Image (cartoon, rainbow, N blue to C red; front, side):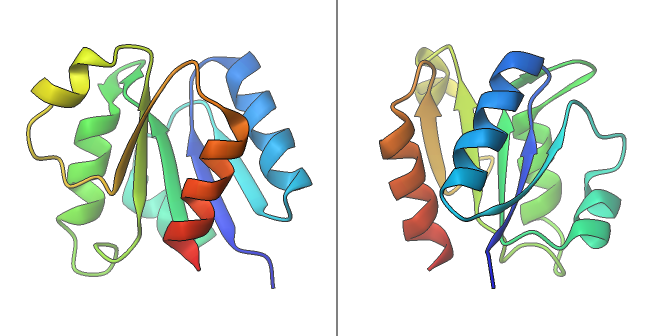
Length: 119
């Protein structure tokens, strides 16, 4: 059975590329441009991994990660945080993400990182 990846990315072009690449690599993918309730989205989709941009409309990926990692029912789900601002990695604080990837990113490296976290 294909591993399920939940992507939260508000840039429609990047979201489409991520969905296409991950589906091509045999992942089941659900993309969201926003989520008002990440825990409900996870409950509905049951992802094996969450991939989220840091800068999002109305919130940020760090807060999303904290909600996921701070909940006993979802804390086991790996979270990859992506951002076009690599200096954020050093100053983000402890959101609990499992990996940080800077944009632009190498697609093959992203797929390898996802594979390592879900297998």
